[in-house]
Length: 271
Image 1: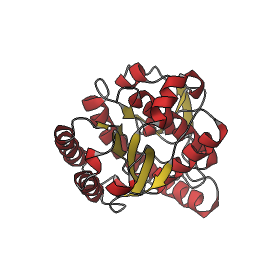
Image 2: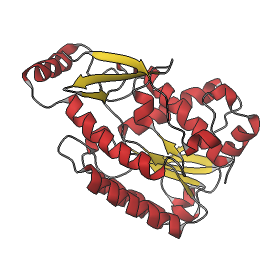
Image 3: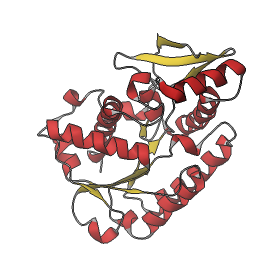
């Protein structure tokens, strides 16, 4: 069975560190006010919807966080400050999500929002994916949108990771796969991290990144969670953040939503 280990890892300096603190309590009131006046679009699928629920949970607890969360990608409906979100593309097809996001921006939303971003799902990048080819397509699309919509800020998002499902038939099945050498969670996470490193290397020093993969594989006290595959330490999602090894549970969605809100508040201050 896969054995998890935890270690303290020193994080590299990122552009996001310049605009965003590390906890909700450190966000200044004026940054929350800026966020409440921003128009934001988030293209997502199921894990993204988990995060939307986490944002709603947090907003209910913090009076200073005023967000109008609306499920839409219609430009006519984004006529006031809001966090708009909608499904994009098809799961297992990352190019469909790139094209869907581009089409939504070019249909009128790119001219209306202050901040825009989308995320891939963990099923979009698997062990047999071509991480370089997917990243090249993503970068080409985003660079084109940045040129066309110069007043819109684009947030980059890493690909989520998976962990071993906790208990039940899925957990037993994955453990058996690991024992007999059939590719599984770690092989998929290796390819996801290959994509994530391409994204970080290209953008982390100059543009904001919501590093969901890093957050998913880091405990609240800052320990990095990974498992060994041969001589390689492979990051995996902290098991307590998910009940099925992929989607976020109540604890996981709140953890991811906190970091996303902090980053968005910092970005709204720059708009």
